Image 1 (cartoon, rainbow, N blue to C red):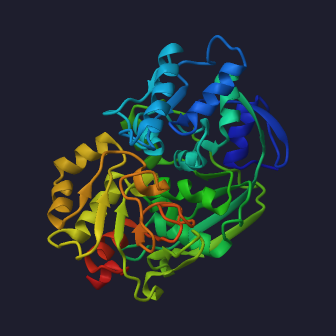
Image 2: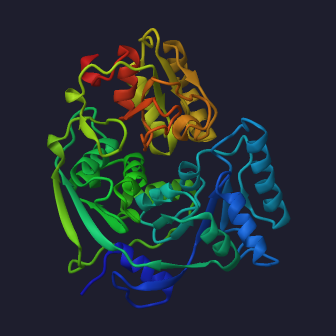
Amino acid sequence: MGMTITEKILAIHSGRDRVSPGEIIQVKVDLALANDITAPLAIKVFEELGKKEVFDKERIVLVPDHFVPNKDIPSAQQVKFVRDFAKRYGIKNFFELGDVGIEHVLLPEKGLISPGDLIIGADSHTCTYGALGAFSTGVGSTDLGVIMATGETWLRVPETIKVIFNGSLKRWVYGKDLILYLLKEIGTEGAIYKAIEFAGSTIKELSMADRFTMANMAVECGAKNGIFEPDEKTRDYVKKAGAKEGIYLSSDPDAEYEKVIEIDASRIDPQVACPHSPDNVVSVNEIGNVKIDQAFIGSCTNGRIEDLRIASQVIKGKKVADGVRLIVIPSTPKIYKEAIEEGIISTFLDAGAVIGPPCCGPCLGGHMGILAEGEIAVSTTNRNFKGRMGHPESKVYLANPAVVAASAIAGRIISPEEL
């Protein structure tokens, strides 16, 4: 019996010829990641172990991205605590303000991720790096503290669900819509502790930005990881980012899957997740008259340059509706600069948008766009749980950048086709 991509990566990192779903294995970690919220507890756990050095100064990454620039005294103290730890132990990859961006966009961009890697992060959306053919997953801060000391962790080998998307996409349909459609089909508990392997003719044609979005939101299905077979698009991305070559793996023809789901992508319209769950999904054409107070374009899901280009194309020459706040946050300084050079930032500013510095911002109700009681937002983020972006009595709808941009212009959630 053959193995899936996920199983092959886990076998390599456990020093075994093969692994099978359900086995508990010890693996060596290529990269350990934490942010300004999750790193402080991990550091305390590390220090309680009494270790004099971290397992590898170049393979720990600390990214203060949630509350930067620091929004208050507690957030400033958190970042200072992490910064001091990085200096004390000589950790190379601590990203300071001006260089820092949203962790799950920043790490691939900086060439820190390669196909075949095994990455563990103290953040649930660490699964983003599966877009590059890596195994990546989130853990708690306590586990990460031990990993920083040992470079190892234990994992249960997940069963794999193969999701095959075939067909050409309609206009204004992107990776965000494919993963929202999958969530509608299987729900937030449809892949608990499973690997989701994305495949099919549609997937082969997707940009890396779309693949990152889909891998990122695999965890919203309950998945342990999401993963794509690395191809020439992957190779081009990795090469441009300056990452090491990596290992290009594919699932064996006789690999065993828990289930295979086939979806005709040509039938999918732009999708919208309604409050208060990412799987409460309908077509944008079925949404009805939903007036909005805020539109947000950004986050680790859809703050890449490709996303900003799409949104700016929709919004160019138009104005944000009266009573609507449009907030745009490029995910990294590099993306911000590219958006300036391409005139994208000017387009947003001319439309009446506010541009924020690279950070997670309003996605988690952190800062730079908190919702008040009764307010409604449409957002390119990945979660819309009750109170996620602010007041518990606010509402969040999730959509792709084109839908969010069009909705900001209309003052209600619409398809870009309506413009």
